[in-house]
Image 1 (cartoon, rainbow, N blue to C red):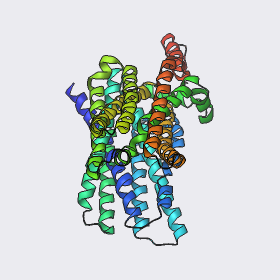
Image 2 (cartoon, rainbow, N blue to C red):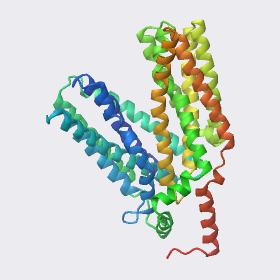
Image 3 (cartoon, rainbow, N blue to C red):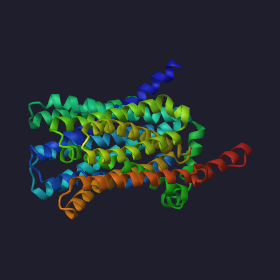
Image 4 (tube, one colour):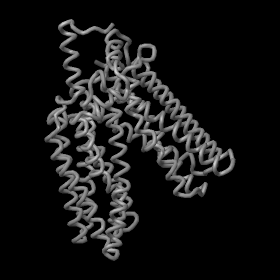
Length: 444
């Protein structure tokens, strides 16, 4: 029992390192390119669009991991190789930006290639890690694992942001390179320690891998994902939940300032309140709520809670009640955390032994698509409605919040139509289990 818990903690090291690198790239490097290096924001945006070019490959990455073991292992080598590529990519990007000074065109191409290498490795390692969780854990243990490791990733982001800020208090290009190398090396070591010997070579693994690679990738993708009604339904559900719960992420502080006349200090605390709510809800979900209520019920509670919060946020703006708004932001975090925990558990449960990597790759595509749509969704609508109403900030933001609530209502409807047991992957698994039980299946 103790050994099992220690091993679960060891696996969490990957999530911690994943968060550390996210803080470096998504926060620090973003700011340095814009402020210290004075790069055009559009160019920085192009670099950070690299995930959109790489994430469609996640399904292929999962297919490779499912069906093509390396030295008898389906997940461990891909996690380690992915972590190496991610580190090499980000170090190369920073060296190109800071030290090498070719023509602007060559610089742009070189940095973009480095970002693509980083994102390829990051997606490969993360997809393989999630597939490893699906392989190792079952039933309620899966729910605890996926939510608790997500919390560890958030902790990695927080620790990384604080550590990087302290290390770069007196910024210099040399310090940035040193910090980058240190974080990438630490992240790689954490990934290796987390993955090492967390898989066992077995005849069962070889048999499952043979089944997974029996069809070419495109034929498998068509049968298991594109042609499956339940997969398409769940793909849309993921997008609706992500957009509906996260599109307001960059809008709450401007709403507080422009509509409720809150000062900078007061609006700056909103993200903290929201984040505390998210982490608290995810922790409670992983520890006991999903076990007691089931992940679908937790997802529904989170969606309903967030729908009512949006109505309250609109009402607080209409009445000018800042106290009500502050309280609702934390409740919004709770709703987002519950919905996120329920969705993550649904994602990892909607897998099979044969197709965990492929399906998690498909769900990864949906999540990145949802985040990308959400980032554009809020800003475009606020600007459009504001222009149409002559600069009425309340109406502009209220329209976004109302549309997010509508998406979450649609997500609630989709949840009632979802039946994982009707998916092609689950039916394939049931047939193979039956054939194996009767001795009718051959793996020659």
